[in-house]
Image (cartoon, rainbow, N blue to C red; front, side, top):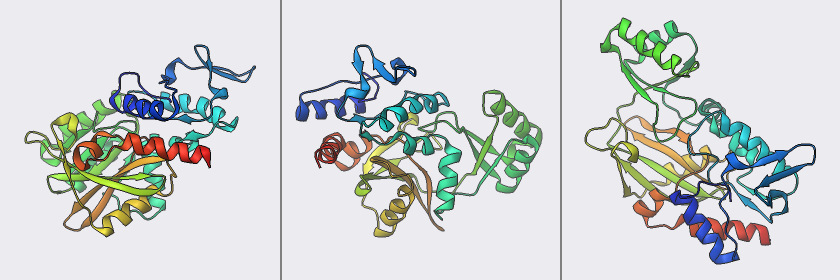
Length: 290
C-alpha cells in the first residue's frame, strides 16, 4: 500500500489488509525508485511489479505538483499489470484543483462562482464583483493555504494580498466567491462508485471554514436523496475506488466544492460510525479475487 507510515488512515487500512491477507506494508512513495531501463520499480528490496495489487492511500503528506511526478511512476506500475486502487491516471485528474473544477464543470455539477486568472489586476476586479472571495491554491487540502479577501479591505490592500499570494508560489489565481452557508458542509463518501455514508463538518467558533484543522468537528448527518444523487454525479467522471465529495447546502441550492483524490476515514468513523478501512479492504480483495 502506498501511504504515510504513522498516518492514521494509512495505518488503519494496512491493519485491515493484514487481517485478511497476512501481508502488511506501507510504502512512502517518495522512497520508491524507478529504473526506466530495467523496467523495475523498487522500494528497498520489494519490487512493486511483483505485487498482486496496490492501494494508493496517500501519495504524500502535502498536495503539490510533486505528487503528479510520483503518480507517473505508479502509472507505469499499473500499466505493467498490477491492479491499482485507485488507478493513477484517475488520481492525476483530481490532484490539481483546476483540473478537478474543469471536470466538474463539464459534467454540469453546480459549483460556487469561480474565476481563474494569472492577472492580479483582473483578480482585484473579481473581488469587487464578488465582494468576498476565497483564494485557493491549486494544490492544497483541508483548507491549507487558503486566504479570505473582502472588498472592504480597500483596493490597494486587496492587490497587495493577491500579489503576495502569487509570490508564495500561486501564479494561477483561483478565486471562489465566499458563500453564505450554514455552519457546516458535508462529506459524501463513495466506495467503488456506490454510496457509503455521509458526515458533517461543523465550523468551530473562531474559524470561517469548517475544517478539523481549524477547529471544526465531525457530526452525523443524514442527507437527502437529492444530495446523494448530486454527489454521485460529481464523483462519477473520476472513477475512483474510494472518495468523498464536499457538498454545501445553501439557501439557493447545493454546491459541490471538490471531489477528494484519496478521501479520509476519520469523518466516517466519528460522524457516521462507519469503519471505512475495513470496507475498503474488503472491496479491493473482492475485486482482486473476481
